[in-house]
Image (cartoon, rainbow, N blue to C red; front, side, top):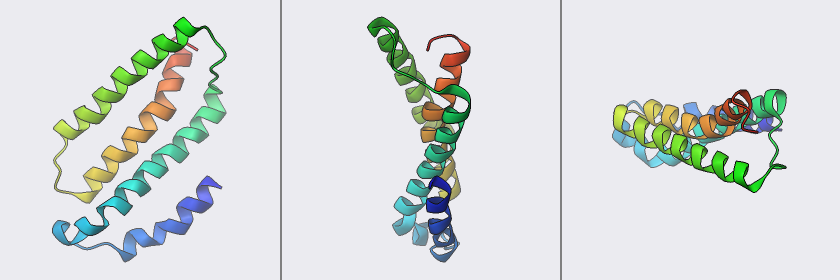
Length: 117
C-alpha cells in the first residue's frame, strides 16, 4: 500500500517541476510532503522488518525514550535547516525526508541496539 501510494504521486514530481525555484515555490508543499511520505514509508518498512517497536515497557523507560527522541529530532530538524541552504527544492525534500525517516526508522533501530526498548 505504501509503495502504490508513492507510485501514484511519483509522476507529479515531473509534471510540476520548473527550473526556476521561485516558479516551483507554489508546489513546494507537494514536494516536501512527498519527501516526508517517502521517509515515513521507508521508516515503516525498516521498523517492521528489523525493530518491531513496542510501547509495552515501564513508564520510566518510555519517558526516557521520548526525551532522547525529542532531543535527537530537534538536532536533525534544526541542524539540517541551519546547515543546508534553502534555495533548492531538492534540499528541502532531502531535509523533510530525513525529518520523517530518522525519528521513525533510525531512532527505534538505535533504541533497539542500545537496549532502550
